[in-house]
Image (cartoon, rainbow, N blue to C red):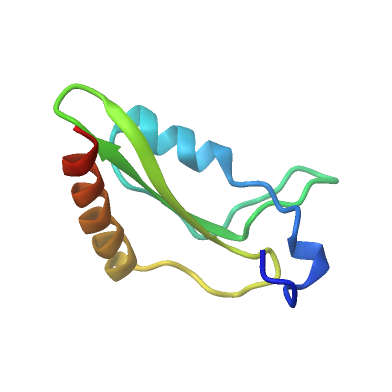
Length: 93
């Protein structure tokens, strides 16, 4: 992590529910209004693109925004990550 990053954001865990959704459905998962359970900090938005082979999900490309960020992901973002996931899939097979 960058040393100048706000210390509150150093330990924000990934939005695992969004990761699970993408891996299970084998499709892009985008959530721009993540609600964290009481007492827990999560990213405010997350985008997950699975890296696929013809028979399995090999992994995922995951990006998120910090909790206090007001940024959201758009279709352009998922298109870019889908292209990255395609390249990774070819290299990993």
